[in-house]
Image (cartoon, rainbow, N blue to C red; front, side):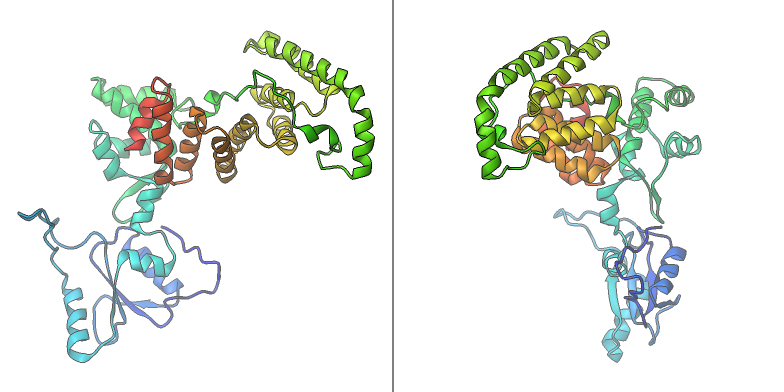
Length: 399
């Protein structure tokens, strides 16, 4: 069940309250709801009487689903006897029974409301609407087989995280193509360690710098740590500036040699890395060499080394979008999604037309349970990469 997340461990917002629930709760089961009330200082009862102080109306309502009237408006649901009794006591005897919706109760108890859960996760009922070839029993069997794992079960629905949508979508597509569900399960079981969890790590190609640009004027007047020097240090460095021109030119030559070798062929990677290191020996502040060398470490899954190089590059010159995007990939791989979001957002501030940054920011928002924030970036990816590898996925999630 959802857990209270109050910052005050002894906070009891329901102290002294006698709570009655009516209707079907959407966010949690009735037993869990009663336990939550007790934990927050209140008590529960089955019937409404003069001692009742609060009635919580379940989000699922009462009776049949509302019908649509001739003017297009939903007809009101039938009210429960408990709700009617609470209204009578309030009207006839001046009782002070607070009637709360389930959303209002969730906010008071500091647990996720039904609407919050729908924004963060994907409800089974919504998945069955989106993926028409799947049935509820298919979903249940996939859970039983361990192909997908619910993140939350409530009284009204079962919720799944974004990571499970790969398997769900694959099952739907194969069923639509006429494959039997038994064969679908066998295929999913065989490939469950592959791309089913939408783990985009293997497809996250780091942004590479191809063309050198002139460094900022004050770069030579910085200490080795990248901080502005004192005026005395600046004068000394200025005296040595002429002597470093040749080294900078040589560094750029090594960089170009490394870039030519850095063609995606594993056989050339070590030579490319050696050329980038030579470049940095000649000019430790050549940010392009730092970033491309970090890319090689990243391709080898040497994340700590790559992260250190990207961070140094950003400390020296913060306006290379490549460094921010690539550092975001590392944070994404480490499941540090808030940091990844910040990096991708900064990369897009510097280069709003970089399609991959929109894509990975959308994925990151989805994994954080922020689907609404992801949608603009799904749409941007579609516009910027209409033939992109993930454009169909972007179309699906931008709706």
